[in-house]
Length: 456
Image (cartoon, rainbow, N blue to C red; front, top):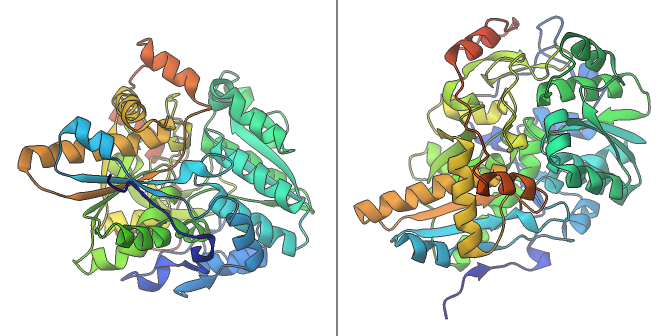
């Protein structure tokens, strides 16, 4: 019988995070102040982040030690397994070898607790009692609720309205861990009220929910803000995925030719690929592939520019691929991929040509997810389905060419709380949304100005 699971012991959880900023050929452009357009200072960020995370955000140190208290909590579910998808390979009749890093084994069911635990720990050290955040599909909100429960902090989650309605059990999970979860936009903040006045029937967006959470944190002395993706310290915390992968793929006596991750804000993709990026930049590493929804194709159709991280312009300006901070995507079921921007570090990789990007409609993604469930036995999250779709397409191309590639994708989360969306797919009721270029052009016409020059 062939091995199909490659596991590590708890003692092999990495003791340091890898920071890609140390090995990039050019620096990640700095965040800029939303009002002045000038690079933000640590003092600017101190209103919503603890000192340790501010240091990590701007650090160029290659290795950042993981505190023992954080490793202790990570050991609840880590190291996560690397699995060879042999049944999927057999079904496809491909010579390719397909592996997936299963981040769905975490208590919240996704990769998000990798950074939630770290962020809450550093906030606790700084004397913070409460954290406000946003969430799309609910994976980040539930992960932060879990982490706050571990360390005894209060948590308020602004959940994008369409996902709040589509995914009731994720909000149940947040409440189970003691968090307050409300639909965004909400009447609880000035930014939420202003948006509801203009469009009371809005489906909401991550940009809107971020505005509410940042406003909440900035207006309460005992409260900080936590972001589940995009920022460099978040991507750095997620590097634990790729660091474990390097050890596990060696156990399989294999080497990745292609690394694939779905991409909304960029954190699970970053976690998978960061430890391999330097080799790719040097021309001796794997191909790196980001997979987006066609309804929100930030990397594939967006513009590389400075833009607000939120909808109303309260969050710092970030240099990234963006569809425009006012862009509100269609109500696809992959709520975690409905963000107008992309992590600055991921965006820089795409700009440098080191990262490829593809996009799929949601029916094509769900088709791949159903095939995965029927061959490998695990129900994937709608977001994860996008990575699976790309991995399957890559494997089918190998069948056509006879190439024996090693394909690894990040299984970023399970879909146990997304079964209503599977019901819709199986009933033929999922809609594919074509995104007119004029919608993107309209949103990009309102980009802010930063003092830092950016070359496209």
